[in-house]
Structure formats: C-alpha cells, structure tokens
Image 1 (cartoon, rainbow, N blue to C red):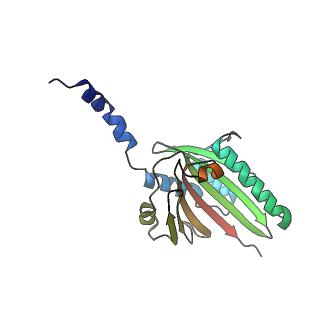
Image 2: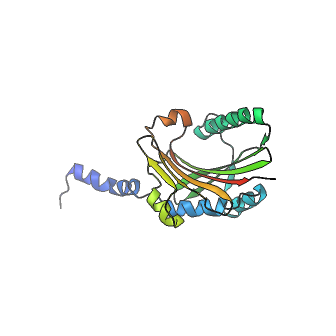
Image 3: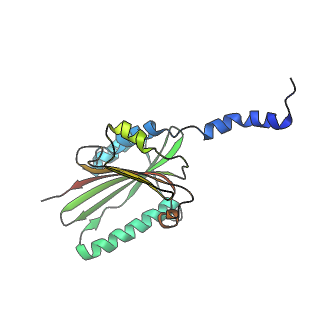
Length: 200
C-alpha cells in the first residue's frame, strides 16, 4: 500500500506525539512527595525519608531558575528576620526522577520568636501540564480549602495539610508565558508543605 510522504512522517511521529500528550503522572508524583515530606517535625527524619526513597542531594547552580529562586527567598527571609530576630537553616536540595518527571525538593527552616517552621518545596521545573486540582482533591480525599485559577497562576490550598501538624498543602502551576515567571524565575508545577511548631 502506498503511503504519501507527509502521511508517513505523521505515522513516524505518532509515538512522540502520544508521549507529549500523555496526562501528567499526578498520583505517582503525589505519592513520592508524601513519602518524602510527611515527617517535617525534625530535619533528620525528613533526610532519612528522602534517602530511603532514593532522593539524591544536588547543588543548584546559582544561575539556574531554582538557584535564583532559592537566593531570592533567602534574601527575603534574612531581611524579615533582621528586624524580628531568629535564624534560617541552611537549605538543602534533592532530586529524583518520578514517572519520567525530574523533580527537585528543597528543604528550608526558620526559627523566629520560638516558632519553628520546617518547609518542603517540590518543583517540576518547566512542566507544561498542570497538576489538576480535581486530581489532587481525589487523592487527598477532600476538596481544597481555597482554589484560584487564571492565565498567570493556578493555586489550590488544603488546610490543614497532608500530614499531622502540617499547616498547609499548596499545589501551584505557573505556565511558561505567565508574567510571574519574571518574578519567580521558574515555571511549571510546584508543591508546598510546611510544619509549624509554635514553641512555648
């Protein structure tokens, strides 16, 4: 059977097209996040979970999108704590491939006025498919506390968060053409988890 040249090109490209149109592996990513960052009370517990689940420590180049975001966050935190007192823990970054997605976790910590906040941020930089709020809601077993979506940002929040003691679970999607990219330095999917210890 004769197949026109243009049609043969389409047939050859079909597997690649199918791959790029595949849905985002939401459940695999969410399960990996849960396994890595459910124990944020003590950093040593979080580090143990990261190691046990195959996350590898990485150094973020200062000029990379996440390197710039990290530096910006550190500068803002130091400025805030300069007036209030307190300290910032050294950030640590870890990476892992999950269902074909290159994920990065950044751990953070802040102590201010006896309040300790340990954070876990997960990034799928440059991802063009959102982590759909409806999919996350089904996985969480409850609807988001609040949700907002526009051309610049999709944000859904669950309060309380995923694990006991965690104050919130936020899922973000920033499109590549969003004006927020200039400010945030990154586009794609991001997840925020924080544990807050109010102290005495």
